[in-house]
Length: 402
Image 1 (cartoon, one colour):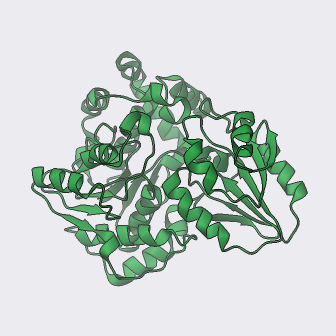
Image 2 (cartoon, helix red, strand yellow):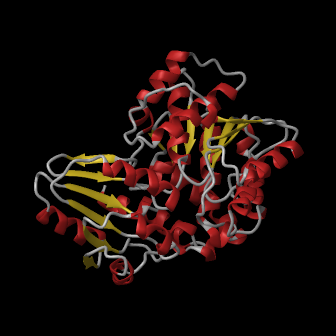
């Protein structure tokens, strides 16, 4: 199998959530446990930090990894989804997994993967754990894919469990209320394992305390910290993620991390881990900014950041997935902007015509384009040097223009 044939085969397996939506959501951990057993339980061969939450878990995971790399440790990093290349999901000290290893994993285990009907996400988790075990990492930062309690990553016993915050996202799987969603996210809290909560939210603290009590452990809230560190990740919203990452490092036992490692790690996240798509400035004159924020809680911060930009005219390339609650997010966008509505190139992508029609109801005006690239090409023609272009609404929109 070639690399592309391998990826095509993986993508064709039981529906992958990022592409298909609800049909891909698994209700138990049976498959991943069976896969892990067949692989020799690789997740038991290295230490981990588990990072969940609604927003900021990707940035927080990258920050923690960067700090630990600065402290001299060999660090695995598992995140999802990827922006450009599948290999982004699995990294060791910032280096993406080699394509040959992906081919070898699938070829070696194909019979089992087919017989067990292992999903795309489950096999990716098994692949990551195998790579980290083979590379003999000192520790791996594992980002939750969806939810927590029933997520395929939730077979690890971490050194620290981190939950960034709780917002109304993926409600069709996780529950309609914040406490219901918090219950699913709290599923990564383990027996006698320190817990770091990024933001103290009154509506859900009782849920976390109840789970922590049951697991004989304690909770610390990062939002109560006063320390102010800087990071190379642009966007003022990263301040919350900084506090969460630092508090997670401070709760980690058995690792020597100096103050200078924390400072340098936070200032070199992009260099150390190759993170993309977080308030990433693609060019100046016109200034083009892309950001993967895609739900109400995340967009609050990015759109507030956008208000601080100076420009003659604002252009917004906007695309979303079909399970997004437009009534929640569209009113947050500025009316004084020219919109380029588009559809991300995945089955879950919402029709650009539907998006345009819904946006026009609240006076967001612009044209519809059949693809992200068409919209982006148009904005490059229309935007002058004094303008600002914002690209977002979905991780998949950002992925297509990077």
